[in-house]
Length: 155
Image (cartoon, rainbow, N blue to C red; front, side, top):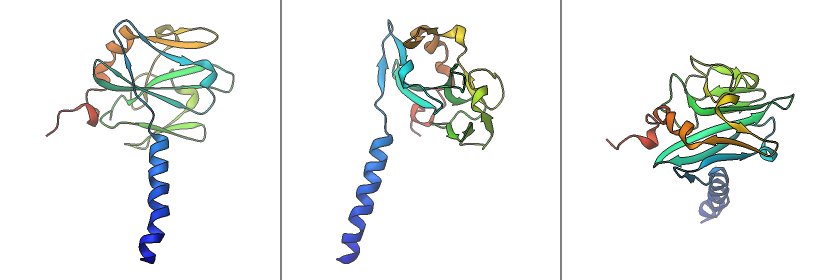
């Protein structure tokens, strides 16, 4: 009985931690766009989850030290089969699949190889309040996410 009572707080802690990390997923309609409030951006990478025509996708966004907005798709250009491909470690993003590490300043700048697939400034519309990525641009990148385990047909 004591062992059972000791396990309850651990289970509750795990459920709370898992629940708090699960972000709601929005559906981006054909006439819509992903809108990221600039007020949410900081030097800590934020991940925006959404579905586009039923396909799970994610964008990561942050501001660098000088306030420049950085955006990229949260999938590795080489090993993109895993969801949540990147995590932040200090001032770097690290691929959880291969362990390659990139300066956060390179997010949205570098293209090719094992790094987050960039969303360049010309691929989005920025205002003082919002970073907007159009449905059409997101749709053009859906091939990057078809290999995600959540998007693959069950075996």
